[in-house]
Length: 150
Ligand SMILES: [Zn+2]
Image (cartoon, rainbow, N blue to C red; front, top):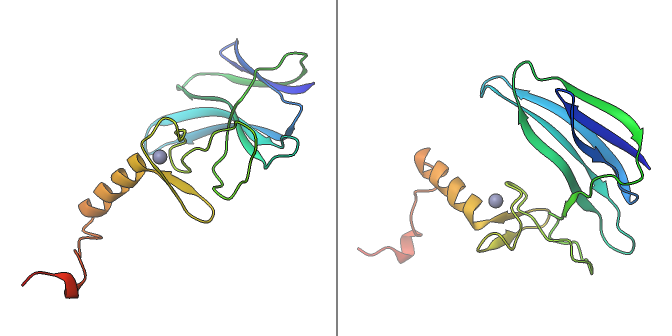
């Protein structure tokens, strides 16, 4: 099966392949302002008779001087990806869990998931965003005038 083999400093870290994959991307991203760099291998999976899912094979930090090598290979046994869905409207019959659209945590790892039309967010991200908004002085209006005590 056509797969992507990713090596960091000569050590094979993953062979990403999946018969149901629509695409598999290997990406190296740097965040100069944060001084961080990451290598990520992910893709879109189209399971039979179910909505699409997100596949993640690898996500790890890399350091300055690290050498990332991506090789197109034919693999009989590629690494099995972690599968999730973030679209709350997906009506799936398989066991692929939903994940927070912001942090990627699974619905079974957190207390509560809040769904919108196209995305969902976990209670931990809601709290984090609330804290940031308060810090920025946003969202501190309190209850509507009619319900305020005088
Ligand atoms: Zn989250």
